[in-house]
Length: 493
Image (cartoon, rainbow, N blue to C red; front, side, top):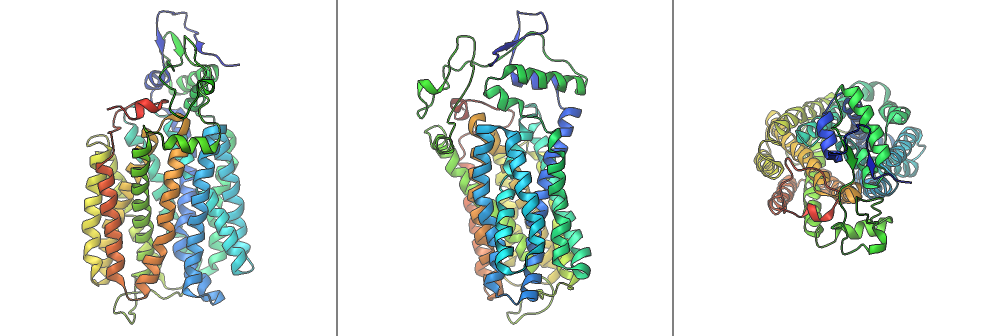
């Protein structure tokens, strides 16, 4: 049984909503704990993605694989992420953020650990695909954290959350540098799965998103969370009544009157689109279809260019090839590979710093356009072969700005979607981005090793330009806006 009004203050003249309560309690210790858990999940995801830069050449050398088989090790992970991003988004939106978090942690940790014991290529491919399915739950962590954060300075806190991803990439590059030459790729897989198990171990401390509960009309549960938040943050809730927002305008073209419970004093249960199919249909409603399609272009461009730059860093390393470009040997003892990847991984830190400085000042849209322009400029000289040091510098800059763009898009996407389909919308957009991740090995590895560096770089540049155009066509700016539970507000100017 739901509760629409909660009052323990004795003041019946005032009412307040969830956003007003979050603003009043502020960002404190409670959100810091939420940030740490969500950040742990993000770092674990980053480590499992970064590992693709190292295990492919090692497995190819040990098992005598072809270049196509090596590329497939990366491609199947992104294929799994494509499936997982949609699945976990639907589970999270329909059954709760906590269930989504638990499902992601279980699948990722077990499959990541078992892949270290693969006895043949087929077993490795299957297990790494399952790892990808688990990694597709990354948007669940970001949506869950976002829903605890007050509207003010939300952009900066989401950038701070994104820092955990960069920490994960740096940790993985450092771990590979230490482990690969001494113990090999199997031990790297085992040790890299530790953060995934840590996310599973600490799951019991995660609480359900107050905004998800609010959207479901479980006001009493929301109020209990807010009280605990205020106590831990040493603040107070607003005086008066915690109420649900009016719902007479909430019905969309895909929702029947029977699907939405309307009450004169609020809503008891917003049961929008309880199935995954109807959740996706909502993304294509007249209010959201333009934003959905533009976000797909942005996520595809971001994933294609970001993961492509990571793989390019492994390919454009030391040693001369028949093409006259610098390429690394698949020998896992070649420390220059780990050095270059580690150096460019540190590029993400200044990228995050710049994002934090401009995202709440310039706004989401203008910040992304600026980042696209700068990443385009840094990649352009690589159309022709450059000296190793200059190549590393250019890749450093390109990764810095592409990561910044990835971060800001990750803020904009959950801000623009309503609560009922926030995880689904972000998950589907992320799935489309994974298609870019699946394709980029064919460009970054196959084309470069096939002596086609210039066309490969041009393809990355085209993806960046198209994503920048999509950003400029976004219908609205989300800087400073409260998160919404309704489709109508998502399209309001």
